[in-house]
Image (cartoon, rainbow, N blue to C red; front, side, top):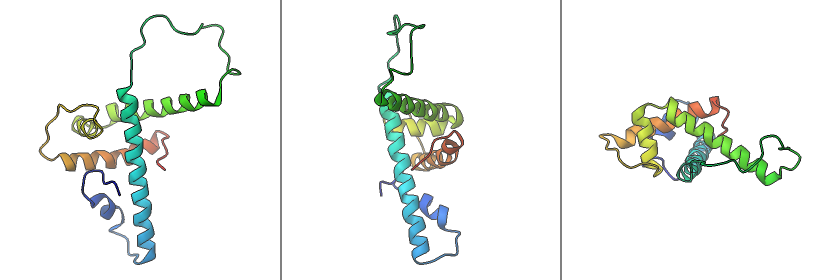
Length: 143
């Protein structure tokens, strides 16, 4: 498992209170590990998107009155959905996380590295736990 912060409390906290043992608990742990991996992968894609942002200057590349959806390819539709997903994740990171949690996320994924922390791993853990709750509320499915 690619661990978010090098610690395991997220896994144990999520299932530690259950009374199940054996295969049921192993399945829960494996499912949680897959979900954590999916969140880390999704946030990595967001970081790549964030690093590739370029301000659009000049005239638009299309006419405002002559666009049609019929000419849209499947690739264009996928790119559009991906861009919307990244905009939603960016909004959650920028607006819904506390400043210290946002800074930890930005540092973890290499978007910005100008912050110093006393408890970086703890802050990063809290930020990821909040993302687990906030992203599904915004319509982002973590698979």
